[in-house]
Image (cartoon, rainbow over all chains, first blue to last red; front, side, top):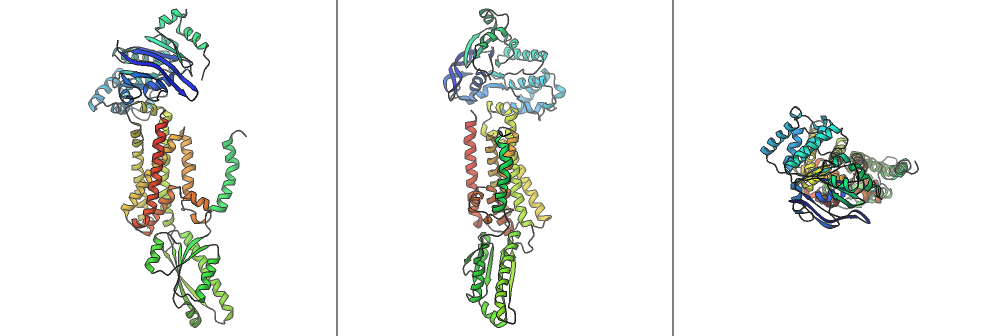
Length: 245
Length: 354
């Protein structure tokens, strides 16, 4: 299977503090990879390195086949990103946002129109297409943000706690979007606090105190830790952690 | 409350700073103003008046024989506040006719200072007049012919219009740019932009461009209002003025970018802009309070305030109508300041990406 992310001993140090401690793993094409861990475990730092937002202290990694040290510009063209805090401009309309991000990722005017309308129809937001994003409820904004993040059909999309603060139904709908993207061949790299969402992933990894302590499918993990839910698995591992936010 | 150092500083520090500033630095009094004396007479009377003028702490006297054109040059370069000219037969005229004339020329582009300077000079002259009179029955009359250059009616507009221009441009460019970039950081969209192929340098440029255009529009509005409403047109070259203004705008923008990199929230950005930029512009640019009245350390500080140089340039071009030959020094300094800001912000931006 094609590997879209390869990490070897990736480390990030801030002075004496080792935020990410020599993590090594691989992610395959089309996978939904859950990147879990408590607050302060080093998840966000690791993700920032993979996105090209920060330079590692040591170790190596390749994202979409490109080296994160020397080819970060190429990486940026091939990934999508949805941040925790929000990715869309509230005082622009839905379509203006689509045009903006489409333009940044190099889509032609025609492509933007086509894909844009397809997106809007899929989310059934045709009537709101010319309205400001600020007027949408939170759940819709998140679905929209995700759709915009994959508008340019990136190889991998990084989602940093995408479903914070929405009701379970909306979360379910959001995950449907993620499944569809995965079926299209887009690899989804998602961090989350919700352990039930961990069950939706193909494989998950859990970080504790900067180290990656487990990496396996949810069912294997439950078996290994003799737990009935991912919640319990997480609890057993996180209990031993020394760092918290 | 005692632990909140910042509030403590505001509560206790500010009043002290203000008293010091207003007591020593920000004053409209005349101190050490540069006066040129052209003494064609070089006789007892003129010497006596000159000595009196020099004795006060108000003036710094420079004695030279210059032609009218050379005197004009000195004013254009902004080197002197006023010129006192004694005609060749000064004392003789006083002796024979009990009446003599002398000329006082003042730089009217700063009407407040100009009127104060001429008042002091004429009072010194009257002083000398009354000193000499007790020996004679017929009083002496020395008539100083006072002329305000560039601003004969001593209108206020020539003073505050350039000041307003500096303030407005600084406000829009520095504060608005800073807030706009910080808002992007606060909203979280900055992160998304950084992850995208959109180069960080271009992000900043694209934020700056609307404000450049806005500032130029503002500038034109001010100039139009000044010309048609206040009766103060641009005496010098409009093209030169626009060029210098664009330079100043870029300077302010780079300052705004620098602030946006260091500031963590929009409120902090606004605060730094106001306290760090707006206030020094009002206080140190020479707009409200003459710089030469301030103690030397503050005069040095005022040299680092870019609006001081811009204000000087605008006054020269707009009020005095001079050409580039007279303001190349100030232009160079402004360019230098701009480069420094740009270099620092570019360097900081790359580091901040971490």
